[in-house]
Length: 302
Figure 1 (cartoon, rainbow, N blue to C red):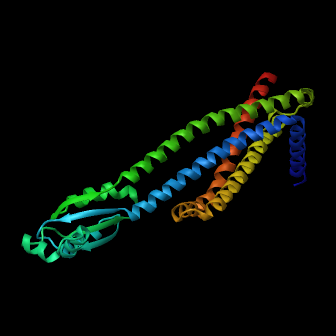
Figure 2: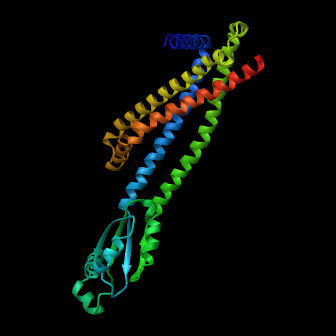
Figure 3: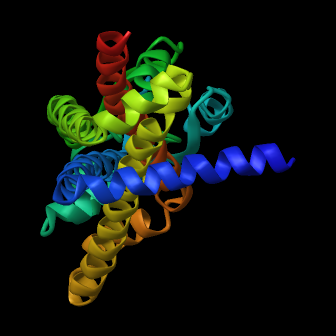
């Protein structure tokens, strides 16, 4: 146990010494990682919020199902309710639909209109709601194939636009994250290389007394991890502060905007998964940059 503590104490002291030697280059590496993870976290939040909106719209958008002339909506209701993905089915009898139509027409006398036509020209209608917006096209196709269904109609333009927006955000953020990841790794690699060069004489002495390459360069890897973790902490703090500021600004905004922001602040992925993702990503970037720098020096020294 004492040997382990001695080794741990050495590694921590060497890591802190390297960080002190880094000077302002440390902040260059940390700030680059922080900006990268902030943009990455913001894109994740945006994607999750668009996903939540799509889920909400899926339960609000309706599929209008018009039946054949002699098919009763009450009889068809259990069949459609049994389809996977259907949240609810509302039956609108043709008599009710006829009264609603005449009411919408305004000055038309319902009795005269009914007497002139002699028969109700409408059919029973079903209003079908889906559990998720992604299921709307699939449900519409399944319902069309049911015997007794004459026509199926639904509006999916809003959902399609939001889905396209989500894909555009994902594509753009992926490019930005890749570019900034390469930049962050390059900055960390440069910082670690400068620290190693500053301690070149110490490293040569350690090699002469028989220290292994892993034992010599492992503190530099810990420095890279330190850069990534601190950058992730700064990024997460900025995201939380930004989200709280946004919530405060839209207090007096319309209910729709407030509900969208409330959905983001109460999303458990933002509360629990986001910090785990950011810290893991930051640590991975720090390890990658430091290993590249250390590997070059270990090869040249060998």
